[in-house]
Image (cartoon, rainbow, N blue to C red):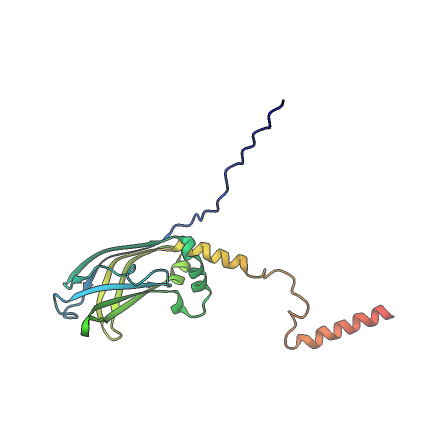
Length: 204
């Protein structure tokens, strides 16, 4: 008897994002002279499009000095960040594309007290076409409190993928408009007149 042939299914194809993950690094903090009393405990809390908890985006707490070391790093996959990045790019509000940094210290009853803040704008990274690698100034609204040093935000690849996905989901600008979509303002009368003229030619 002939034995049944053995059929082996090929390897499953899995869609994998080739974009580099979003990665945030903060080396440290330098404080302006007399901005914060020496020895006071400080830390930085970042906010990145709601992609992580406060605990995940908080540096270690360190006693304040002229120079503070954090050596902080956080990473999230491009796939996990895709929807949030598309929302940031699409939003008309520039602040929706901000990655914010808040300098904190224990306040009354040990509740965090905000001392200063700064930000990086993701749309700016996308427009420049390169990852952010610089310092971020921190202010309290009226004066400079300090500077986050060695800040690195790897985001441009994931932003480009998100921007491309938005283009693919939008209607083709070159496609022929649906009936009635293209008529506006003074073009209405002209379009109607052309239709009447065509009808008269057809009947004649």
